[in-house]
Amino acid sequence: MKKEIDLPNLTLGFDVTSAWNRIQDPEDYIYLFGKELAYLGICDFGGKVPGSGTADFLCWKRALDKVGFQGTVTVKLSSEQSVCADSVARKSLEYLKDWEDM
Image (tube, rainbow, N blue to C red; front, side, top):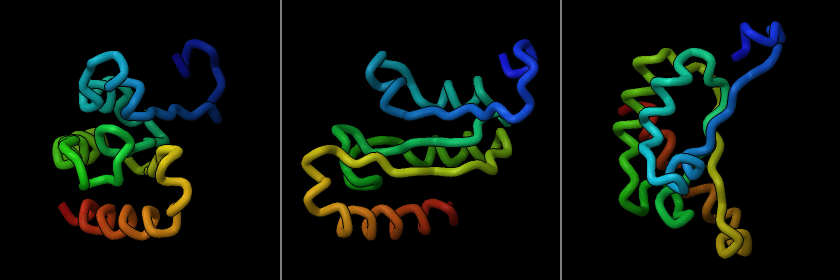
């Protein structure tokens, strides 16, 4: 799509919940978007802190590595988590630091 519309500074972002809401696997989208993917929004199932639920983060990490992802990863918070956002951010950062080494 990026080539079709000739906007070289256009980047592609993907939020894993977009796939979940359609009962699809986020990994498939990582492979589909490949190197064009510049942004990834993550959370665990049910909007939980990454690593606290059942989402397969290792599978996503492997897919990101295979496509050569060099973009930005952000963590989504649910509205319930916003009251303790600092704590959630710290837990998420700890998990993502470990995730980076997987």
